[in-house]
Length: 282
Image (cartoon, rainbow, N blue to C red; front, side, top):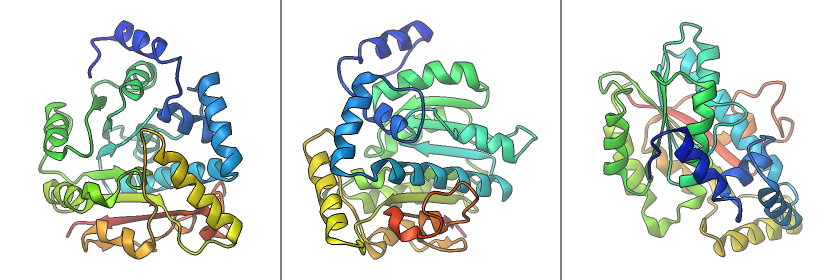
């Protein structure tokens, strides 16, 4: 789905207000303001079953911001964000530009949810540079088509390293959907020197029976939505990096990856239920 302009995007947003949007629900959990009453009501229903779901989402978003900053500091100027959701607090292009005051970074945002693309079209028009930042519709599960659309933007130089971001997405991809082949494709198309930024929720080492049940409830809850998923242990998740060299501190609970003063769960990273890491293609 594509939008010819502001009016098309606005009509798509207005037509979606009779049901919750997964992207807007996530936006609500991380403290964004691109959400509506129907999204907030749905989110609070989830929170009743999983009280810390908001903190888990904030952990994922904060990790993304710290990872993007690190990529930019290492000289990466091209970012492809698969499953980007809504432009919201801590946008990739904002973080990258802040880290590189030369304003030479380019970002392609990708989501397969039409309403996320609609909001992106509206919000990027107000906050971004259309010569350097674009939002497109594509599906992680259709890698060849997705990468063709990325190239069609004209923003990505195939000879220059890319930071590929797949943040808080893989727990919505079950093993039966063959995420191993998907990630292998994306790793293969990236040039040498590229960075792979991955995170996902884990069910490893719950601190109590109550937390174990909360995580099971979360999986069960989403099983009945359009976004069923699968939590993974560290060992199960590590394979998605395909043997690339992990940057320090390796694959860890996300709050332990270069925490700053704002990091949620910084004192006890394992309580975040989110794993994260950044790897480089040699």
